[in-house]
Image 1 (cartoon, helix red, strand yellow):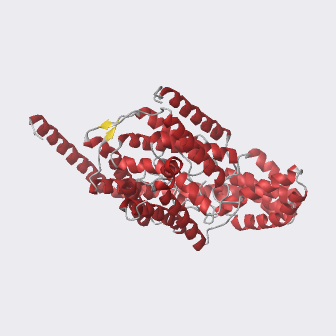
Image 2 (tube, chains in turn red, cyan; image 1 turned 180 degrees about the vertical axis):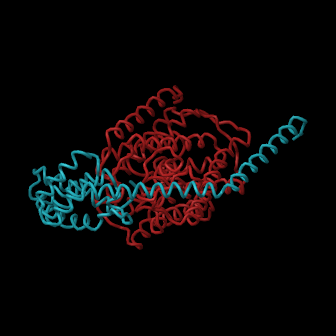
Image 3 (cartoon, chains in turn yellow, green; image 1 turned 135 degrees about the horizontal axis):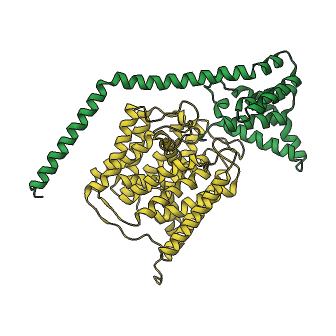
Length: 355
Length: 180
């Protein structure tokens, strides 16, 4: 490993920023252990846009807007913005829905999974095992020829559509028109000051675009090439910084019971995250990475993001999202449907005889 | 890139549409007072609905509170049962029941009632809500941990104690916050 390589330090910086600011956003007002949680933020934002009517989960999270616009700015500065897409778009949209369903049943995206773990929440262990298994299965499937097909270059305008939509959401956040919902109670009402949250999102989006860092990508690289890849070093820095900041801010409470935003149905935590890990490998990144890629002009990732918003609405409206009380029957059925979906996709999108 | 007549036509149309959009938004901002009023109306409407709900709860459950104040806890429970039959989905009934049962020292049932109430309406655990019972719930959880945890460990086959333990964990998790 070349210690003088700028890419290595960029990955480490991304992990450090994500771990530190992920905990600090919670200290500054976001819900406990949810300083950064792409799936929770998407559920909140879907509620704000009227896609569900849970009055306790409605807020246009500025971090989400920051992630995508930060990635756009970074891609533009680095001349990496490129409109491209066209690889199984409808399938990606539906996969985006199931990505959020898997997260909602676990209660958190892969970033929050690790934030929960580093805050001492032992219920997250089942999720970690599920995510690693999902990534491993995804790698095995890819090795055996499962892929969604190649992308092609598109007109510049198509890649700018998602940034435009997120700019519109930023305008809604600032102007607060009366058709946008904002919770006055519950976790939707818990938020860091919006300017700080937006700035942090922008910074993290930019860093993630530069470094290509993401949680499932790091696990994938760790499984495939070990520590020769830079990504696992970023993951290690993320874990270490989140653990240190959690301990320093008095947020480290080691235990299995009474953890914030957690349930004790470990099998479903495992399966929910397995679904997320597998889908992330199939789609080329976790929910966070999809936002970053959408900011780089990847219209396929943009469709995954649209799917994630639909998933956020469905997860709340249909009672799929788990709560501290556990996972509903609908939640369990939705995860199984998601696993069936990814299995059918693997069967249909497999290039046979590639080995 | 070569710009032809058709491009110019499209550009002109785009400019016209953008001007029209700006005008519409401008007109809208002229009616800002109207929009602000709509927002204020919505806030007021929400506040009125909330006040009406609180008033209705006081009216409905007033007799129960009265009996509770007099110390007639059994009669209060009977009255509560009567009211709850009319409004079975109302969280307030479960919360009142929990408070009465807690006063009677029936921890397991009090825990179950709080859980039923909070699952219906999370407001009772919020810090800022006027309906908040956060402190009472924290007290009950502390008492429950002191009393029930050791008994549950000593009697692992006892399903009532196991359920009470699950309820304690649920309430602890909700008190700890996080996403819902």
